Length: 128
Image (tube, rainbow, N blue to C red; front, side, top):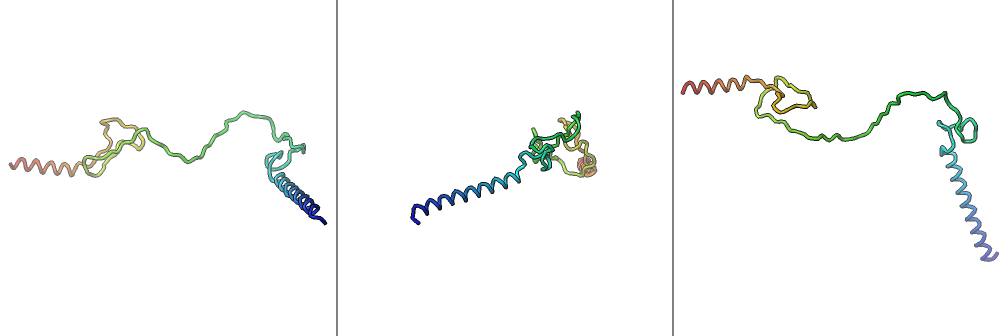
C-alpha cells in the first residue's frame, strides 16, 4: 500500500466515525426531547405528532394565580420611637403597622413611681 491510499482510507474512516457519532447523538436527542409528544410523554392518538382531542369542551372559570418569590418590602418612611421616661407599660393603644398621627396617645406607663417622686419633692418644698 502506498502512503496516499493510507491517508485516503484514514480520512474516510474519520468521516464514517463522525457520521456514526452524529447519528447516535441525534437518536438519543430524538428519544429524550419532547418534540411532537403529547403531555405526559405519550404520542398523540393520530400518531403523526399532531395533538389529538383530549378532553371535553371549553368552559369559563376563574384561574387562581399564585406567585411564590423571595422579595423585600421597603417602607416609604420609617420612624424610631423612643421614650423620654422609663417605666412599665400598662397599655398599648396601637397595633403594629397601624397608621398613627402626631399627638396620638400610643402607650400608658405605670405612674406610681413618678407619683411617689412627685410626692417626695412636694413634701420637701412644704418643709422649706
